[in-house]
Amino acid sequence: MTDAVSALAAEKFVSLTTFKKDGSAVAAPMWIGKDDDHLFFWTPADSWKAKRARNNPQVIMAPSSRSGKVRQGAVQVHGEAEVITDAATVERLAGLIRRKYGFEFTIVTFLERLLARSRKPRVILRVALAD
Image 1: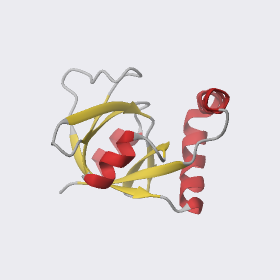
Image 2: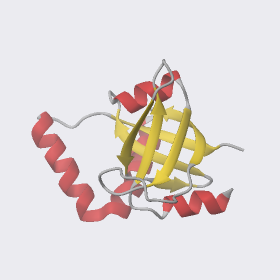
Image 3: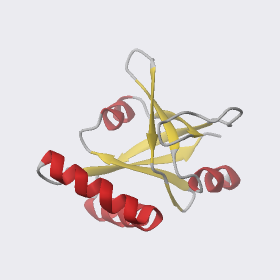
Image 4: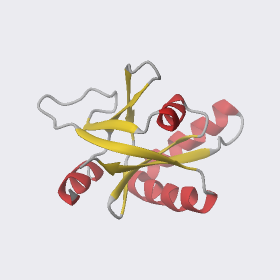
């Protein structure tokens, strides 16, 4: 189990698939982090992926490109997401993302603040791998 966690956590981008109420899948490329035996994703609190994860915690993850294209032959990993809103946890894990992505993190968050004219509240989607 931890090999799968470490392998996905080492990726730069992961396609995160969440599910609508009707069961249809929606995939999005995401930055990924590792916290102990969990993977996590840092996302705006009002994002559709966070809303979908609240309704249905089942997720599928696979290594992908920046655009979300899953590599041919990539292994899909199933998990269960929990939406974390605790400010201290969100800030701590955002720090891990900041360290992993460095300058790219700085640019993306700057552009987001510029376009949204403020800093968006964030949540963490913490994923435990399915057995």
